[in-house]
Image: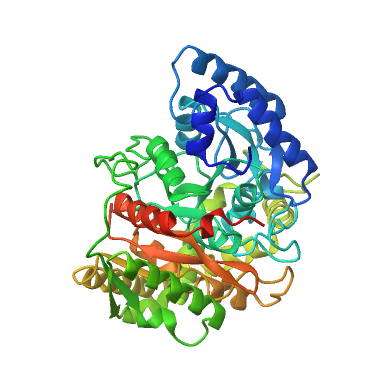
Length: 477
């Protein structure tokens, strides 16, 4: 059953081939037998109760497409009555008193939450090694990383531990683990999915989205979670289409832009070969390919690593050992309480980014760093606007390499370079997705597709047409 897509599972539930309780128990058994460390919290009792309710709704024909489908929920979304830790010691004892909007919408759809997925601490990382609960292992090779920060979510799907999973993408954290684990992941346009109740890393960059086996499944889940939310000041009040409606449209005449900057030095030969083979498949479907340039994309890494740490230093200032979260024992005074609580509660990568951000925002450095980074961000966004005057979609690699070995990056700056192809879309707020496009040295390669604002339907259509012609999405570890 775990090899089936959401669409296939929904049909099986409708046809009474199995019940939601049976399906849920099947996934729970696989999770409990797994050594991939994909989950922080397994919500066995909640899952079975939700499955029982789902079976009642299906029996009385009061169900949606997603009713009774089990999923993994990234542990960055608040879930009422369940630990929400953001994979940090700081929040190891935090039981969320309310549901995030995404959590609420998934509950309304009748879904079954199997548990909270492991992740990089506060979504800061590209390998899922910064988690307080230990590194997640890639099911294709357990000596390699799954990518981050939504690594647990990606592994849950790729390893057959859940039908789909939620993720968040601040600088590539849906697309990169999707690529490294051989599944489909989409980051919607900034403002398309509510951020309310999603523990903030960088508020102007964070966006939630699904990790699934197929583009069709992503469309089904996006239908459930997209939409305006008055509780979120960054949510955009614009019409949400039915993302499944245009999946089968022809892509004849589609214009694909290949940025020359994405195929320069640093890209692994095996990854490049897989990407170009995928582009050839699109040409066979009637697409036209053009070389384009995104000249300011080379500044994406330094720009991101100023903007994101500045925002995280502000967002994480609330975690001080006073109102909630980890508190040191026997503080001598208020300063000692703050100092030791934050020193003990935060991991090394989180501390590093808080310090970078605090420094860049400090008096005398704000103009030199943060203000300049925001101006550069505008230039990066303008590059995309110019490109979309000439092409319908931009394609390229997600990551310069396939999954790397656990513990192989000792230098944090080298790790930051792994995000070179994904950061610019977050800085511009554009939708983008990763789809399985081949293998290199027996490890998955993801094709990145970047669309213009609010073009999620087009991206899903393009991805679905590719998946009708290839079987990379059906390959399993």
